[in-house]
Image (cartoon, rainbow, N blue to C red; front, side):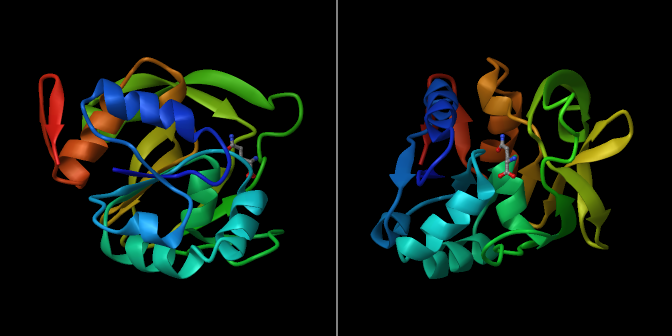
Length: 195
Ligand code: GLN
């Protein structure tokens, strides 16, 4: 299970994967993409991550990977996967047909925690929003998988999933488990995932 590790909070995703018995593989160079089942694009600073994708020569490989293989983007990761985002220094990967606005909750509510309805879990979970983006447009063919007071905060298009909050910062591993099992098709068993 690859973890884009250029910048941001990839270490917390690694903890979540280990807790579920999956093996986190840090991706910071093109050759690290070989033999991965799926990729997580973490939160952080999307403009910096996009610059680093170009500086490391990773952009082409990551672009191909996310078109073909399962990918989960969280927060800045959603921005990288979205098709339309304004005010960025480089193009996004554009694999999910949504629009997103960066830092869209304003200064006062910079960061907050709120219950989110997560459709694939048929339940709510605590969503931590940290300078989170907002989903401003949902294209046809994009399924909304999570909502905050009715507003979309999580989407899926094919094998690509993106959410505006940070499931890796709580101890609730259900969203990672759903991604690994149902989206990426990895067989999770108690204490270990089969690669
Ligand atoms: N505000 C950040 C950005 O636009 C995202 C914040 C995050 O990932 N927690 O890149």
